[in-house]
Length: 385
Image (spheres, one colour):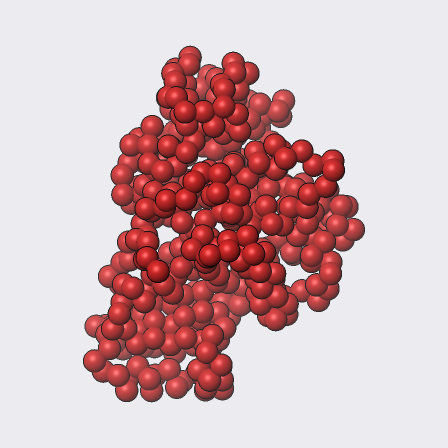
């Protein structure tokens, strides 16, 4: 199977590499570090040995003096290893330790701060379209870009199994929730919040679960890297803006699998939310891999005027609106015009499903497919305009 080069550029020092299951962390590391000492905690015998006596990690490292790169895969399985790694990092300055994980929950509880300042933190995201992807845009919008799904011979079946196994392995087996039925109801309910302001009370009511429980479930989704929130842009605000963040499932294909469909669900609504999520996940990956330091926000006033994404930082202020339509209407530019009134230095971009590059009222209107296929952290974001 063809190896797809990733945009992630690994550092020379020791580091954490987090990312959801199936995003290609292990594949990348095995390709990049072919002579590393590999410790896979998903292997039953390795897990049993090190969970019983974490100090055996020292024996493995010191028993392989020719191995200067040590990779511990899925380190959250045995958080007690962090103390041993901490000591080894201090003692073996010539070795590089790489720790992967698909959940930060256990590590938070057991003191991951031990290694803050010694191991840098990086994340692996689903594929970006600029990573030599040859799938059609419609296929990507339907199935998403999780590598284990994108490279499958049967993507739809793999995606359905992936979501089920993720819930079973990361949630049920780790004992993160007591009532798995309630958690499944929550997943269905929270899927309607994808690409929208997060109203926890509404989610709790729809799922018939207490609000406090829903808050805990949302934190679980974030800890196991299945979802994230984007805050409101409030810097030097000239008008009153909302306070609630927007919520996204980390991949548009995973969102489509979680989202229930029925006779009252308009396909264009689901497709529109998936498109916005696809842009969001590309922007998240771009920011994670890029040398430029920028943050991701959205903007919405109390009166309901909104811009989907605001990039703020070394690249300046870039406002991006996403429309699931093949034509640009004047009303589609309303949010961008209002934002530029408050922030005249902002670059304003509208991404749409058409094929032509347009300039309307100083707003660059770009085909979303072409924009995402050009977006690369190895270049300034301006190169995608």
